[in-house]
Length: 91
Image (cartoon, rainbow, N blue to C red):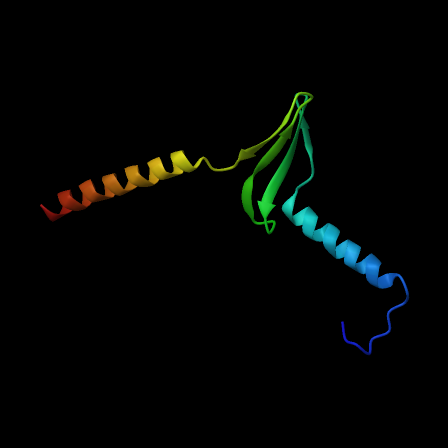
């Protein structure tokens, strides 16, 4: 917004509030009710899924979308298979 632009009193804070709400909406998705649990999706910038907050009567916990150990294991397995296949192609 330019300095010389007229903004009615109170409109600035309303607009800022809507912008903040839109940013929160991009990070936290709509809650999903499922079998006595509430799941709240969480993403970075509305694009990269990070995981979900799982809310039950007993507790609230964050469940990551990606298990780092599984991801690393899959990457290492892929590298090993690629190495073996590459060596076979050379022979």
